[in-house]
Amino acid sequence: MSHINIRRQHTLSRAKIRDLAENVATDLDNRFSLHHYWDGDTLFFKRSGVNGRMDITSDSIHISARLGLLLLPLKARFEQAIHDYLDDLTEEA
Image (tube, helix red, strand yellow):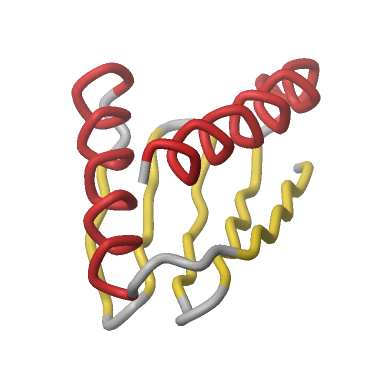
């Protein structure tokens, strides 16, 4: 297994960042059957080969995920895609 850990600062309201996180999770669920649920300000996600969480605070987003062996060769691409997606979200908001 391999781990991805990304932390990003933000200046958005907690409600706005939570809405954006929900939109991301819903999009990923529709595209890749990535199931998700909330527990407080933590969004948990899971599908075959990957599971993780997105923790939201008043000033940061922390994404941590574990990739299964079959997805290990794609780790760098996943990390870059997460960074790009977070860039787009925080610029739009």
